[in-house]
Image (cartoon, rainbow, N blue to C red; front, side, top):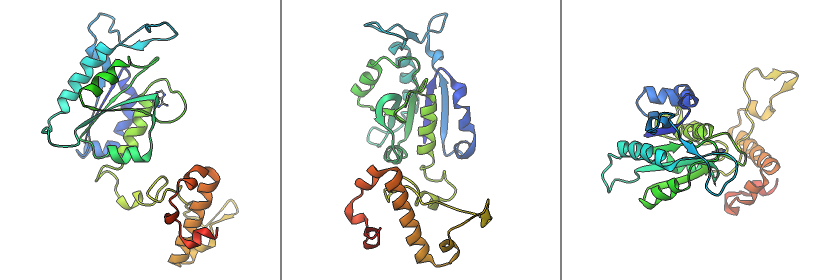
Length: 251
Ligand code: ADE
């Protein structure tokens, strides 16, 4: 997979050299490139923003600078044949976007190229999304949650990590992707424990020491259901009735 990030703060993305994403880059599984938007400015001050039409506070990022940057970065990675799906996706992190979930991560993990355009200030001139959408490109305006950050860089980091770990070969043990929060079961994950068996006067649930596989499975499922009901009741409401078994109904 190829990932490009365009930003005025390339150093923000330094964390992508670490951990699983960094390892995947070194192993050649992930071709990740970070670009400085100011490379595409044409004036002495390397200006990327201007005042908003219609008035109001703050500055808006100029579409001409973004257009030059994105044409080049998208052109660069567009080496797929026209009939070769899925091609490139342009992602614009913004608090006014659709909320990014594990479903988006799963879908985007099979893209050939992802280009993140990280806005700052009051955002990027709306014509940028409109223009690239009109060319037929898959353009996603995505928010990582209902709060406002200073720019799209941290949101891009979050999405790259969530997507990257689903790219085949990136996670050492793919089984660890099976039972996790927001996975196929539609439940939060059950609590987990390791050694020592006693810590701060706290013991681990006895069933986990029983060696009784079916009882452990039942206990974990009950814990996942209780935890989800307490913390995320809307997830329980969204469960398909058929996904619940007769033991669940007894809870
Ligand atoms: N930029 C600023 N806030 C954001 C958010 N919540 N999600 C994505 N991009 C953002």
